[in-house]
Image (cartoon, rainbow over all chains, first blue to last red; front, side, top):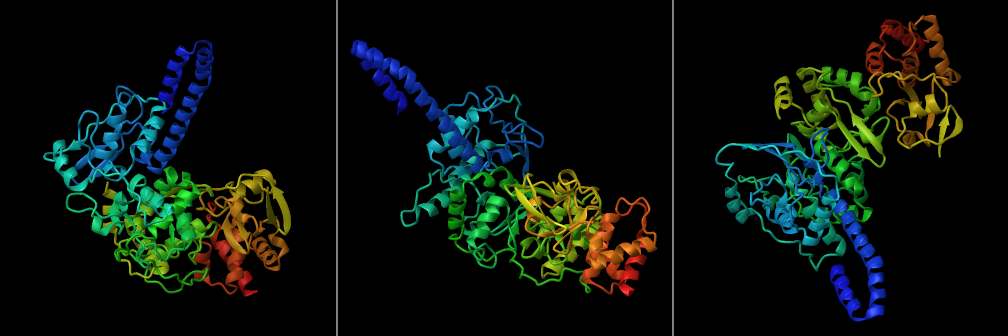
Amino acid sequence: MNTQRYSSLLSRSRLFGLVGGMLSLWAAAVLPAQAQDAEQSQIERGEYLARAGDCVACHITEGGKPFAGGLAFELPFGTLYSPNITPDKETGIGDWSDDDFVNAMQKGVGKDGKHYYPAFPYTSYTLMPREDILAIKAYLFSLEPVHQPNRDNDIGFPFNQRWGMMFWNWMFNDNERFKPDPEQSAEWNRGAYLVEGLGHCGECHTPRNLFQARDSSKALAGAEIQGWKAWNITSDDEHGIGAWPDEALASYLSAGHAEGYGVAGGPMAEVVNHSLRFLTPEDINAMVVYLKSVEPQSEGIKRPPLKQLEASVPQQTDHPLGRKLFADTCVSCHSWDGNGRQTPYAALKGLRTVHDPEALNLIQILLDGDALHTANGNYVMPSFGEAYSNEELAELSNFVLEHFGEVEGQLDAKTVEERRQAP
Amino acid sequence: MLTLTINDVDLEVDVPDDMPLLWVLRDVLGMTGTKYGCGIAQCGVCTVHMNGNAVRSCVLPVSEAAGNKITTIEAIGKTALGKRVQQAWLEHEVVQCGYCQSGQIMAAVALLEKVPDVDDADIDLGMAGNMCRCCTYTRIRGAIKSVAKA
């Protein structure tokens, strides 16, 4: 638009002599500044959208440069590595055209015609309109180029035949933009776009079918990913987030915590750290409105009843070793009553994590620790994988499930060892 | 500006919300009776009371402390129970190097307030999070039990 206006004004200036000369002076002084402003605001919008899309979570390695890629994705058929998306011309996307970038985001096809694997969530990003995608491109191109060659994927036959993705895309990528539902509010539509498109929540929270595509009949019903449970986030009261007050859900999304409901851990803590905490309250609210309307699915782990526990040592337990370890190491932050001692971020009551008989997320967090960065401060859970044996961690988990949840944990040393070895 | 109530005195401090209370106590207010040990709530030497409960001040963001009643080792002797615990510590010659003892005393007072008639099992579990590298544990146990019996 601006370029058009600019050139038509310039041609008129040639026709109208002095007046035209003044006009062209004005154009030179003002319009480029406007164009610059427009470019700047596109970059800023792109930065916000890139955050909402959580691009950096995958396009970075630990200690690496943002957007330079290299992160490994261990999948059932091999290992993929995320590419460099900085504007480096040789190793990044510096010489990509607008169409190249839009094709990658909407169709999952790179500049060289290579088909991407759906570890790159283009089946969600495809909902994005061209102008949002180009804003992200403008933002990426405003960054410092990083010269970092991409790592080759390590995938065996037949999955290394990228053209096979054509059939997959034909079946599983709708390649359609988001269409607002006129029956719903603007808020709901914005939330739907953020959850289903940019935020690509379903990439973790929706189970996958035999072909590794999201099972749309179970949208957001919860799934297992990277050894973690991505919980059911449908509107089901018991299994999902239906019973969460709106403020609790908004607090969980924006600050990683809703007392008595959930604390973001593992991959979800990363989503909060890199993405959700930067969203405006209006966008968070829109996501809440939409999530509350998602068709309920009664699958997965229920939220445990809120137990009334004493702030002192429980006298009865089937797991005395676990109780001893909890007293040694955990109680100083988590407290016997499940309320969290120094901060409600450490509260264990009401969490699905302490009510899951497999203790998937619980053991992950014990082994590796966790860190959550929020506007309320930084919260760190130390890792205990090196400090305790498999048997100790199993018994500690069994005690936590018994005391804070209402399930009989059956974890043993062998299971903990398997979790340690899992990639 | 945050207002903290420490040892029954209201104090205004100009610090970031996420600064741990321990930093505020030691570096801003100069109250160095509370010690720094591990910094991750694993050793117990930084223990203070918040509304009567033992908390680890090294991981307690100061904003969470504001509006609550904080008691530190400097004032624990002003309560009857605190005084008795300190006296028992002297009678049993508990202290060796002394570095962990502020935390031990704060933890012991909080335990005795909840469970006045403690037995060995209560002490084992109630004091479990407080380390002592000089291994004064048997004397700590003796001192706590003498207060419980009295």
